[in-house]
Length: 194
Image (cartoon, rainbow, N blue to C red):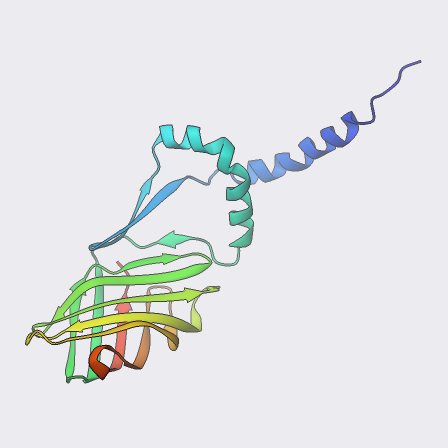
């Protein structure tokens, strides 16, 4: 009489059930996303980092992949973007600048401009959209700093619920928020990732 160990069958079934998941993820490649003053940069992770991190992070990567399936993570290369500004306060300022615009999508969308100089005034901003599901309208958290050529600085830190429209290539928002020294930053900004 042959006796089978009851613990083997569930283990075997678990291995068979995970094989299709592993096969479906073979095209995934690890990458490192770095934010700097020039924008966001995506680079392949080194093979040494992959081999040492793979056992500890494989379940986290699988759950992250499953959780963000509605909006796959991606990034635009830095350096080919643009920013268009139409501000009415604290000063009138309008124009377009070709600048690095770092955009990273996934479960959270983030666009970052470290410095866009328009007519001598410098603008920096970050747009963050939690719960990103693809192009559409969202409430965003916006931080923006305008440094005028006169040296006057107006900074708005983390203005919540700013209406933003995100597209496949960038986005836009209209802001009216009180910043430093009680000055209001009012106007529209749009960007193209790159």
